[in-house]
Length: 274
Ligand code: HPA
Picture 1 (cartoon, rainbow, N blue to C red):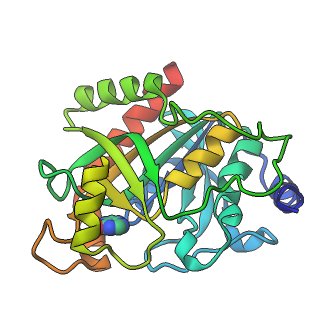
Picture 2 (cartoon, rainbow, N blue to C red):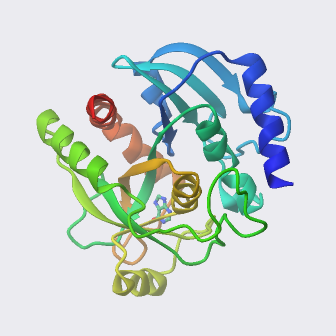
């Protein structure tokens, strides 16, 4: 059922798009303008793919953008699908699997996240070293899709050590400060309570957000090499004394967007060099 839907989506994409990406990029809240730096060849609105879950969040556009970033053929998701929108978790990872079927071998995840680590500041970038997925069901629940991967996939290195080293070197070369840490995914859409943030910090989380871990799991299941960067858009609840708002998240993401674009573009070109 899940695989049938995925194949139908892929057939629709194949009819409309000829571009062959080698890397897939998922753009988080406020980070969608990365596509302005691309040499865009084709775009495909999600609404033109029958059965595709379409995003409802303000600031999320909802289309695949195909083109070159520093000469590297990529597909970027301008707007992702979130679990809190009410889609089953298997639908939330459908776009990731679809980009795998389009030919992308690497998945580059980005998101806006709340900083839990006390050394983090709003506007920092965090290379994701690992994740904790507590409240969101595994996207691999249900009959295994043998065509994609194995029933019990290993998750001991979700975020490739090889890619992390490349990104750390790219950040240094661009002069962009880069922290590193563990990302924890919640369901959202509400932000956390201060007690939850204290608990997550004790569990080992450095940042918290409402996406990414399930997409990373689905990508590992089908054999993609995965990396991710969080934009720390705010300090998590209780760490900052301010109430949290989507507006603050977007404002910080907008402020650091030029730096973020440089970091991601340089990382992608270094990843392509291998
Ligand atoms: N919590 C959860 N998700 C988020 C946050 C946060 O503080 N900031 C951006 N996305």
